[in-house]
Image (cartoon, rainbow, N blue to C red; front, top):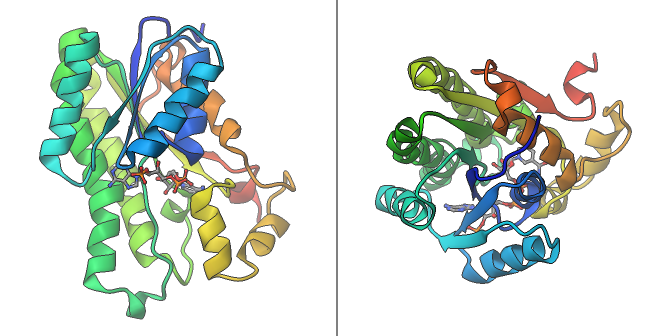
Length: 254
Ligand code: NDP
């Protein structure tokens, strides 16, 4: 039911963290994997990690900065030239700035919006004609619980992720007639470079978050793999415009 053989998947920010976990899941389900990131060395290491799983699926990486429109469209063109199709796009690349709202610079604000929201929009725009030509596709946007909750230091990040959830609904409505399903995943606390940096910048943050996770543990990058495969597969063909928390119950806790 979850077979992704012959499907081609682009994972932005797939060279580490949550993106690498989802890339591994899609590879296990048989998809061809294209990892996109700015850092060529991290890209190469991620490709090697997936190849080490001996799954016999094509894996490649492309260097692209998703804040650059030409880079997004060029990246998708390269994938189309290599594989002849794009079936799955995971808009996962993301950054965060942790400061009180009054301390955000305009540069901080723009950098976060350009990566988390505009970058996702540009990649979706770039894959749309290819997916339409292929008869459909799946776009999965990686939001955050910050799309649901506020806190003191996530003005830029929270606004970008809230926007990404609304973008998910809009694209889902607009592209449903083209058989393109668009959904979002909202990760809770997943141990990655991003949250390691957050723990250093905000002392005690990880412990504070852990105390209200009913599952009583932080997430791992593999915790995102199953939901990514599910949303990317045919079983989710009638699911579009949703945002699914993957958070060990954090968002359910009163
Ligand atoms: P990481 O910092 O580990 O990974 C971020 C990835 O994004 C890297 O692969 C990085 O690659 C890539 N990236 C950043 N900017 C760009 C860009 N301009 N162009 C292309 N690639 C870019 O973070 P996580 O794995 O933790 O986060 C992944 C996603 O999950 C993000 O959207 C984040 O907001 C979201 N998330 C994560 C949570 C968590 O607990 N970890 C919680 C909620 C949401 P490179 O540096 O090579 O460009």
